[in-house]
Length: 325
Image 1 (cartoon, rainbow, N blue to C red):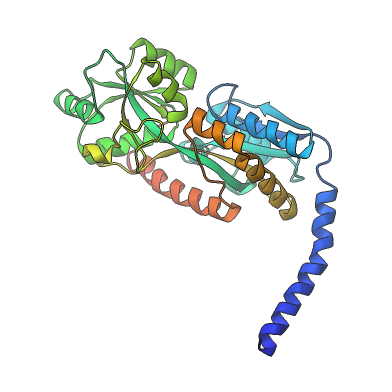
Image 2 (image 1 turned 180 degrees about the vertical axis):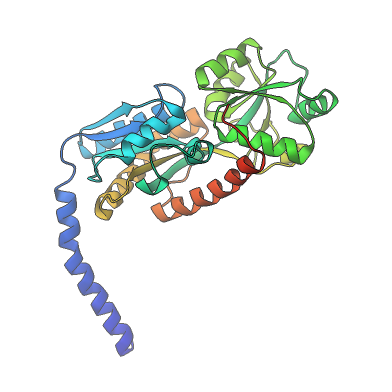
């Protein structure tokens, strides 16, 4: 070992030793009372149960008092604003769905800034599915596209308002030269109510929400938006396999903290989320119930991912002058 190399190691070791008490102190003083997991949606859907599964395992692992606080409204804006304006003391955390990164683009007047929230981790992701009401003639999404080209605007498709699915379809219609009647819904409840009743021809949602209805025979899955076929529905081809020009698209779930939350606290929370999700029983639930690919990215990786996604889909929103409803 050279002198410079040895010296740098010694300096680094000394710094780590000096920094250790500070980190330990920060963690020893935290949490101070109940830890709040804010879900910006009502109970149901996917974000709420995923958060509650993590909450239960973390309570089991740590003994902390963790509560889930549903703050619905404005496609997640209300809950995100609550966390963004909360003290950065590690007591309040935000659990979001993928539409979170699109909200500032759809609605520039949201009552918080992206910079007020600190990305912690992308918990996992799941492909989105495109389903047909079983009485309709479509066996594949390519069949639906062919019908839409013959009769522009006649085929109806249910999507969540302000969602990634809404943007994906705008992208696909432009790239593939078809037009459907896209109907935005403000929640998964009313979307599936109409989809299961045959009010709409097609519907789009995460596989987490779709698979139970497909297995029950109430919907027919005709395409998935991922790069590879879903393990939950291996017989359903991807859009690219069907000759559709499409960008890979995933529903995903992630965690944020108020900006300025001390790094030692963020690091501890990240470690506890990883430990909880990597528990075999939790991983199994996420795979079986939500067709989830567990990601658990580091904060830096999560920043890189959301920045890229926001730029790509944001450009499509602006280029097509899309509105959330």
